[in-house]
Length: 234
Image (tube, rainbow, N blue to C red; front, side, top):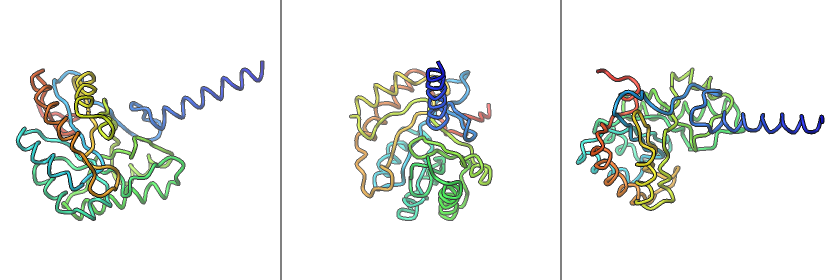
């Protein structure tokens, strides 16, 4: 009986830890949101891992569609492509912190986590003139020490309502997946980079966005940045 009880306790602890680290609605390791208010027909498009050489394809498309988005960027990519970030901000898109080198944060020390966020925060502020107020953990994985790092840098964690899996799905699959999961206040996660890899292929993402946005607009959704979604002015 003791073995059974111990096994059950270990399973429960393992499940709780998995939820704390990867659960989209978890706030156990740091303040975090995964959606906006349910009473407004609004959605936020977000893009992780940029800026990259492909970011301009998205900027051109979003400009034609007249849709704002939130870009969670990696410090290493900003250092490599600073003008791409300036142009993203100048186009009216929101900039968020996605760490400096895109590491998995779990099993990392508090000082490592703080350094990753601080380095990204600094290079973003140096490049566009303002520091982000939003943070998304690489791979959506949080860890002990993140709460303190976010507190020091005044960052709110942002997960997602729906993940496009655009790093492996074709455009049709991305669109189908996100249309099925879109709802009032949804935060949709896509990518304009692949970690800190140079010249990533994001053609399927661009194609998917070009099909997804009109489809959601036809359903009556308005697109906003994450901050606009969370803090509507009207």
